[in-house]
Length: 575
Image 1 (cartoon, rainbow, N blue to C red):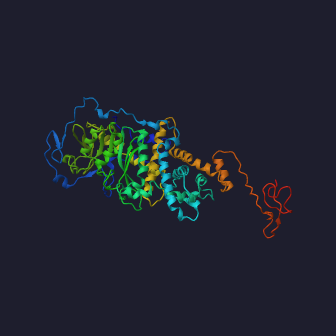
Image 2: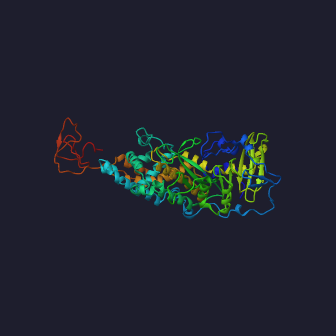
Image 3: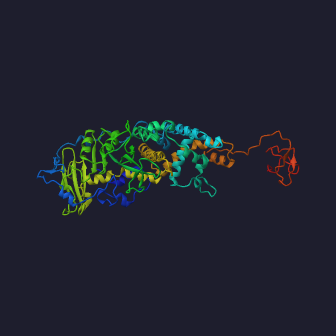
């Protein structure tokens, strides 16, 4: 497996060519040795660890000239590096090359790439469950037409509108301002596809399961309200793309402050409150391969699993088992037992490790008298551990089964960082980049229903994954992500605009503009009122105060007209 010292900028270009990086220069250069101090949370990912007197008091002193001894007094780390005159280890040889697979190979256009993830099965589930909910609540409306059933064309249009609004960074904007075009500031494709009232009604009514059987399913699964749709999208993520050799496992926090039994508080995150989701992301293309929302302890049943870092990591990497990829994680996930278990699955691991782990020798802990920019290495047959001192009294400890030497990255100059550290810095950004990309063109709207938060996240990730597929199948094309999203959003909305352009009850100007957007060269003529049994009517041209009646209609428009305004045609129709 090749070194990753090429840097972040090359990888960012894989996804965002033609578009500025969502990271500032300062953020792109941020590395493991520059963590900021902050308030601690359960998922504490601070990489630099500070010296304390208790570290020396509780540390064993059995280390000798050949080995470092861990705090558990059984784990041994060789001080001498292994013989490097050997062939490349089998776990570092990639045979399954990255790229599209299955149906993903045949997706060439923007909408074809998106339909790989938001496919007919996903749309069918949303449509069916939404109609069940609408039928239940129809008696709350005075008019049946205000609560009429939806269809797959309309659901696709709703999703397209969400994506389109996201490209304008207006996902949190009041819908009235988006639909109101009195001053030319509205988004035309939105109000041509459906009315604001209908859009708001559909968002309120969106459901992803049959509410009639939900209580029964919640007895074994807290994620029951969206489990079926979530599994469909997750299978689509895994069936259409082969990731690169470097993957990142980390957490997301989906902003949410409503009622939810498994809502989390993480003060280090911008949103602070929300739904925690673990993700497995390609560190080069930022393709999301696996997701798992954290719902706490599940009831007894098929969805009950352990929620420690090791077990979560083993579940997250199931789609890439046996593919000889490297997994990068932070110190919440990392342990020596995890590295050994991943080794059995033909995967390597690189990640920071907490100083209180029993397998870490006392020599690797932060020391007051340790010289800056120095590294201490320890070796085992399957992995290597390093302690790097960036500042006085502080050091970062990293464990890797991908590296088996004590190489120093010459590009770091006087800082003399080990290659293990620089490789970790280059591969740890996968999930963080996906968060940044989701925020750039976020489709999420304010909601008090937590299943909608997960639904919006699936849409955001589907848009990013679709772009990965598109760039893999069209390497010669350069397209901005915003233009890519606008294109497939329009394809989602177009069929609904075609349907609505045929509704005679809509204003003629609206229908005419819809035909223009669709590229249909046609002029909608004014409608002629149907002839009624009334033989006498008021002149349509005279002022109401005159109230002139007539028995004669205009031969062209069918309106009543008095003799003063009647020639061969009425004065309104005269050219």
